[in-house]
Structures are given as C-alpha cells and as structure tokens.
Image (cartoon, rainbow, N blue to C red; front, side, top):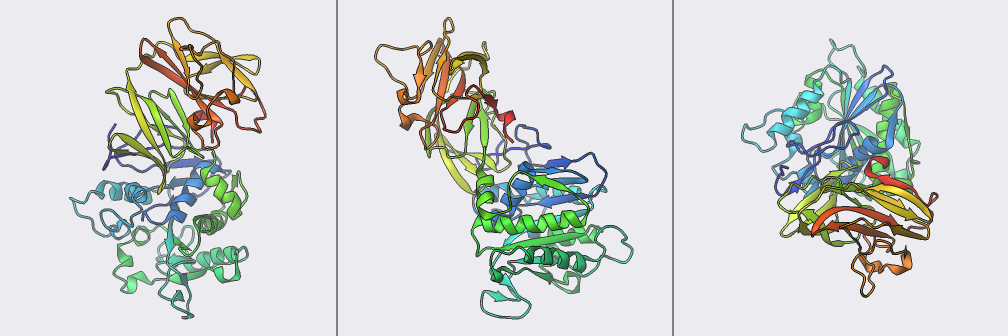
Length: 452
C-alpha cells in the first residue's frame, strides 16, 4: 500500500469499502436511478476548513438521493486536512488556471478538473469556511465587504449567453439559496449574503480558483462560505442548508438520517465510524476510542490493508505507532505488536447470552450479560482485559463485563473488549464484544459492512 508523507489514505468508489489509491482523495457517487440533474460537491480543498469537509462527508455517508445524482469529493486536499494546513504545497484553490508540472498536487488538480468538465455534471458546489461575516456595507472589522464567511460566492451574475442549461441566472440561484438559509439562521446575526466577485473583470486571485475554472468550461459553480467564527457543527449546519437549497432548486431530492440541528449534526459527524485492519480480521470503532490502543496484532512484514467506512479516516505512521485521524482530529494512537498471520480459520463459535452464533473475524457482537467462546483445537483465545490465574486459553470461560478490566477496553467507557485468537504464536483474528447498554438485540453480530 502506498502512502503520501507517511499518511495512509483511503480511496472509495461510491459507497463501497476499498483500499487506498495514489490520488489520496475519495469519490462517492450517490445515484438514485431516477433521471435528473447531477451535482458535484467538493470539500476540503483547503485543509483548515473543517465545516466544509465535514459537511461533504455527511452528504457522502448519511444522505440518500431519491432523484438525480450527487457526486461528492469530501477530502480533496487530504494531506492538508490531516496537517490542519490551508495547503501543504500552497493554496490548492489557486492552481486551476496554471499548475506546474512538478507540483506534487498536479495529479489531484488534473483529476478534479476532469470531473468538473465531465458532460454528466450539471453544477458544482465548492465548500469553504471563511473569515468573519461578509456584509455589503462595512459594519465592523469582522463584518464588512472584505470578509468571506456567511456568503454564497458567484464569479459573475449570469452564465455566458450561449449557455442554456441549469442555473443560467447564477445571481438568482444564489439569492434563493441565501433566502432559504436565512429563514433558518441560529442567530439573527448569522445572515448569509451573496458575494459576486466579478472575477472576469480583473480579480486575478479568483481567476485561479476551482469555481472560475468551472465557469470557463460552461459549468455553473458556487462557493459556499460558512463563518470561521462558529464551532464546526454550526459551520456544517449552514453548509448543509446551502447544499440542500441548491439540490432542491435543481430538482434533486434526498433523505438524511439525522435532524438539521447543531446537536444532531455533532452526533452524526462521529456516529458509527469504524475501520478494519489486517485482512479485515481486526475491527475498531473510532467513535469514543481510547487515546491509545496498545499491542494491536498487525501482520509482520505485511501490508497494512487499512479500510474504513468514513472518507475522513486516515492512519499516519508515527515512529513505531500509527495515529488514527478523522479529518483534522487525531482520535487515537495505535501501537502494534507484530505477528505472522494464520488465515486457516475465519470465524468463532460464541455463545452470546445463551444463544450460539458463528461470528466472522472482524465483527462485533452485542452482549447484554455474558458470552462464552467455544474452544478450537490447537488454538488459544485471549480476551484482552480478562485475567485469571492458571488460565492461558480463555475459550470455554463464561465472561461478563465485570470480569474485564475497563482500562483494557477499546472505548473510553470501558464497554468494548477484544477477543483475539492465536495458533502456535500466529494471529488468526479478532472479534469485539460490545457490552454498551441499550443493545436492542443481545446476539447481534455486526461487521463494518453493516455500519452506514
């Protein structure tokens, strides 16, 4: 598996789980199979703007498109996102007019340009977090015509006269979006305005941007700027309001599995984030994960095989460990213990609250009270956090939550524990036992494929 600057990236096609591609950003195609317009949504072009890339990730993972199609790139400048930088190699949003052949980001720029100019794409939304609050008339240092936050950006009022497709009147579409947002502002001071940069009339900086490149190629494009004065969930709230307005104007209908409140958005950003490692035999939940996971059984001299269900997940190699990131937040450090892998078996038989189940490696079981792993000849079961004198193989032992030392759980609440299996010193696989309260089905078995 290749990496860029020590970062292991994830490339996803549609909603499938896949290993990393060299480009380092992910593409998610949300198709309805009902004819309609196609939107391209881009987040993370500048890595220090979490409102934009978290909003795009929510569209990619928690929205269902009912008509038309939405293509989402949530993490265009992934390395800069991880490093909390506007641009590790300079401002990526100033490279769409010209980019050097030696620029490390040239391949990324060429790829997103080809997506923008694809005949099937009808319009583009580029998500940003901007400073202060744009106001047509100066009110203060943070509220004036030189600020960018809380604005819908257009490069000109109308598309060229020969263009006859969607959003010919850019200004009207942007005004409608602003009006839709302003009926749902959290505070009256959060009002959104339209900012026309009139790029073709001499704005040299805006002439280098993604949206102006789209305009020159006869594709309507809008910049959406949430204010950096807000915490991330509030920024995401305003981004989603803007995105939904443009989708509705284009006749693209959708559903989402959370309510548009900053509290529900905050939960949705982190909900059910998970990853697999080691031939999909190790499953970890990133939500509420401990700051440090020790002795994770990784394959000696093998590829990492990192996969996840969220486009903002990445692993950064850090000396002898790996740092797990979600966007620009480091969630945990994973310290490996290296083993040879033995893939001779692929599941366990586990009795969960009195019911026997076959459980594949890389799965989670939900436990109300107790579980018991059935013995496997010539294999040893190690339940991390359980310790009893003179027991070396913990198969056949009835385990409750109170039998496990909480500090060895993978979550900060002390509820999720690792069941590891070994044979002759080689690692076979892992299952997670989840004792979290509120489990509705005591013997549920879940893998990363079951998590939206």
